[in-house]
Image (cartoon, rainbow, N blue to C red; front, side):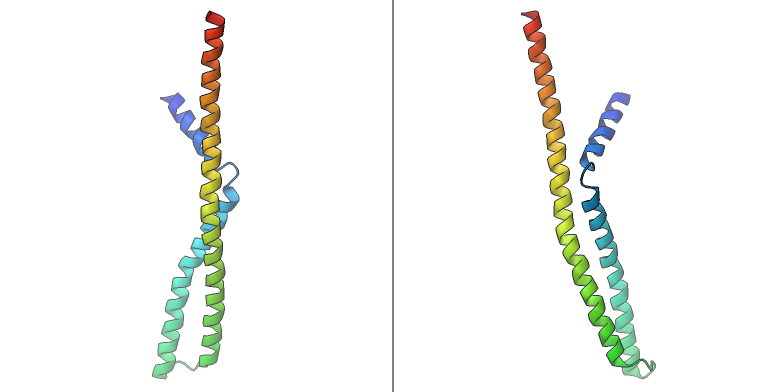
Length: 118
């Protein structure tokens, strides 16, 4: 049981070995994209308050804020759409290389045992 757990930890480590930066970029961008939903709700609430006459904030400042927040959204979305596939690609490549290396080492050990026995 302990050997299996150790093996799983080793495989997980191999998945994240050289792809941590892509994972971090994807996580940060998804947090920004999630926060954008709150910003949009706040902007819509401000626009409704301005239309109802309850808020003295000029509509132009809200419009500039909406444009700026949209630019941040587009940048975060672009980063997410780039980082997530890169993370998956590098993680799977490293995982396959590790598994292939283990298979080859087992095969070479078997061949060596056959040569020594033969």
